[in-house]
Length: 102
Image (cartoon, rainbow, N blue to C red; front, side, top):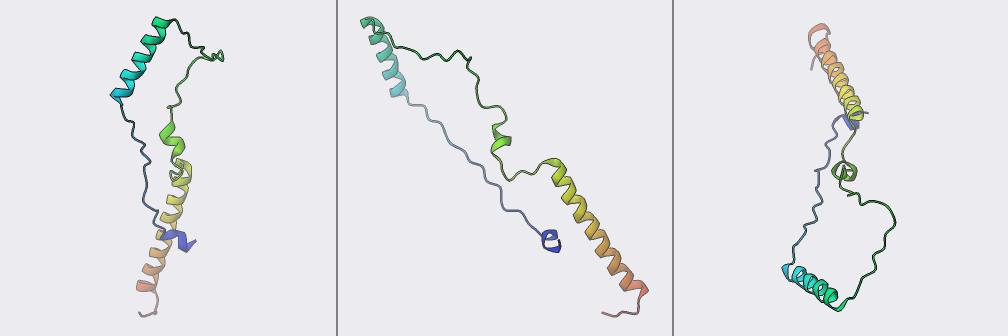
């Protein structure tokens, strides 16, 4: 218990994967689509019947394993506050009301 009282959490890290725009690739894809359209080549699209739904909602919260939920954080904060209050009360009592000398 006393070991967790002085616990300092590790630094938080943010995983960022940059996205790059490749203009040459974009032009090449447009040219391929135009040529396939002129030649009459039809690409078969696989449709599973489900509408497209982006998978970005809540990604920052889901990936952060280091983030505590608020009830856990409040509980640990309250424990630290109670321990600090008890230690300060003990020191105050020993300093003013006992014959114990430092």
